Length: 469
Ligand SMILES: [Mg+2]
View 1: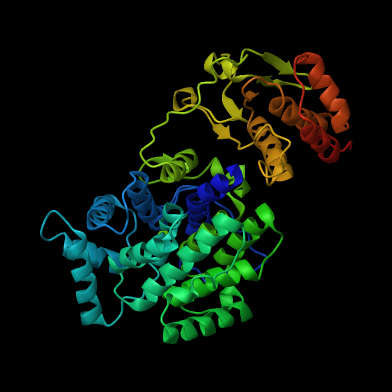
View 2: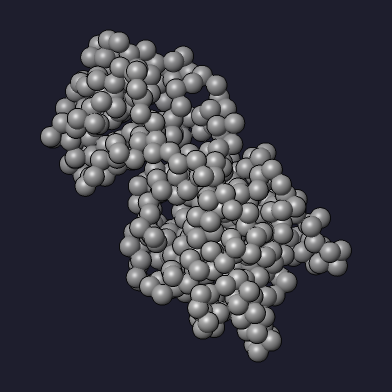
């Protein structure tokens, strides 16, 4: 169940990761394998900043998080209103979306009815409303309906039609949401599960399109500003890469960006589905620590928003850990620039600390201000379902400490009690710093944290991953 929550949280985070990864390369031709794809920012975009794809998806997610049924007119009014507010200051708005929103806003307040009418009018005048701009934002509709596929299908199509009248856009939103929902529920990647929701002739058409996508590489699918080609390119990026888990998420997004042209959108689309299959914990910390964007959110906020979609209306400011022994705080035996401890050390932060790596959930009030903060999803459990990508997460956490140390920062590495998670990551970090085995590093860490006792699965991981050099 916790890994299902992780996957639901991966939907929005994966969307944002693909979006920010692709943003620097938008409008460029397909990118050769010799060229890097990195979350560097570019143009108006800061490193890790997401674009319109994620911003518009967040507006949908915010309304879903209130517990509203997205099929309802009032919920769609709220979404359109939020989009319009966003569009007034946005760095980029798709041509069709801007046209529809500004026409619909002529009579304030803007409504879903007015948006739909403007979308239909745009279609009649231009004959074209099959841009990829509704598919790019559709992902959060899926986690709002994990228990009701038919309602999700209705909501996905209706929200697509708010700006994109063409049935290809609605079909694409339905197919992609069905695939995302299926991935959250089962971990399987299958874009055909939603075909049954289309009419027979449309089903045959889309089946042929999906067959085509699987026979081509993303860069071989032209015109990916068109919703059909964008879906094909995203699906091609997923099926032509592999690796499983975090490696597949990374390779799939890399391939999506290399398609060229509408890079951020193709990668955002692919990211929603890859994040659903592999979870938020599969998104590299290096990306998570950089991700940010409208409306002043970070990766942490996206996870919070996704959690709220699962438990609408429940306001939680996070765990307090009352009753735990949280006051441990010692210096790492192999690196005096790393302090290790419990969450009490975060709350009474030593003056020399200027970066924090949290291995447990922290409350909003405990988030340190004015310094880099990395939050790792690691559960102190021997159940493999709780930590579906344990090795990736452990090494990613070690990598986060190393990166912050390379920047000259003094790092607090902590969990709740420094009992199991903190000594495990501290030992793996120590093994790399000192070039000793994981066992030897763990002994040194447990000498300074005598109360600590990592669980058996974590001890195995220390042995497996901590290799003397
Ligand atoms: Mg964009």
